[in-house]
Length: 164
Ligand SMILES: [Zn+2]
Image 1 (tube, rainbow, N blue to C red):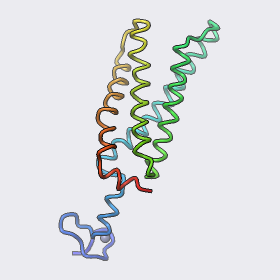
Image 2 (cartoon, rainbow, N blue to C red):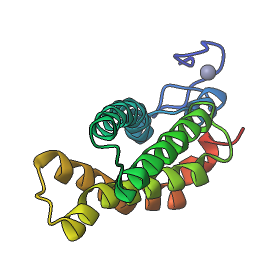
Image 3 (cartoon, rainbow, N blue to C red):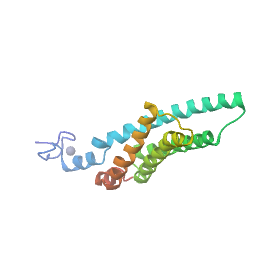
Image 4 (cartoon, rainbow, N blue to C red):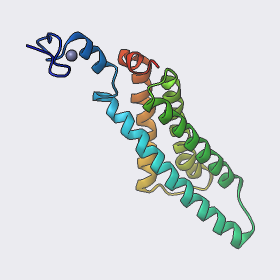
């Protein structure tokens, strides 16, 4: 039987692909890697929305009161940093660059730091109540660090896919 993709070479029984096409398939962003890919896209969209709405709220508040707290300035700086890190990680990820592993680790680590800053810190400082959005943000931050950082460190596929 010939390879189902290139239709030139003899296929391996299990995959239906020849050796060369199997190798090519291994170097693609697929399977489990769809999840961090989706996470990055949603993270960039969510980060942009969050940055925009936070800026509008802080701007209105500043216009009314002429005052901006250190906490708000810090949150603004964190949100901008997080957004830049996510753009950079996505750029490396989708171009399958070598630096993707480190960039993704930085992406998940900043995600958790920002989540902690926006949820746990106000709870400590101002006794703020946690709503479901906050809990979701914190859960996804913890999930990223607990699941995806070990995955990007340990996975052998990461070495094959992100090798440009
Ligand atoms: Zn083939």
